[in-house]
Image 1 (cartoon, rainbow, N blue to C red):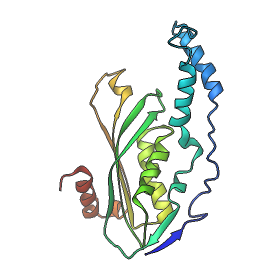
Image 2: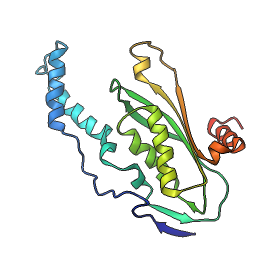
Image 3: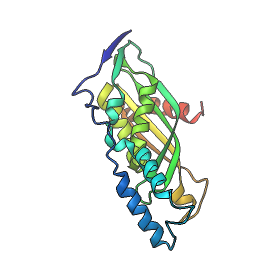
Image 4: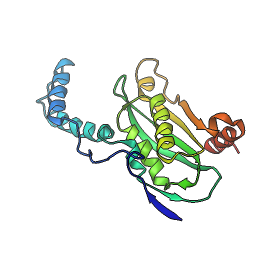
Length: 206
């Protein structure tokens, strides 16, 4: 098995790893929010809240300063023509509509065309995309597009199952509801048998 480093234009430059989050501005904004809801940001229980939220947002939105393609920085030449599936990639993200969390599992599959990648690289693509103000549909499609662009397999499939706090704790208030999204490329889109095999593996219904 021969390791191959991926470089531009195959994978984007990942030099920009410095956070783009302005934590001081977030702190000021949180103080204003506390005042707006009728709270006192100077009382003991809230004095450190703006700083804590700013630090949390810096972590939760760290994917904004990273290119998901850069997570796949190496591949290996291997004449394997079967399906590769990484199941149950746990993730946490923030819905861009209400800045409330959604979380769940992503399942990623691909059929190599002479190149394979480490399993952790696939998980890192999901992780990078999840750490942005996000939509589940976009997360699913961008993950498939990134993997397809970098390793150029015969096909890519991504399925994401998630629970959304914007549904559970406000609005319709239906905790336990899960949304499922999928994105298919190549053989997974054109060949129903390939797609069905992946879905059976991903959902555990073999």
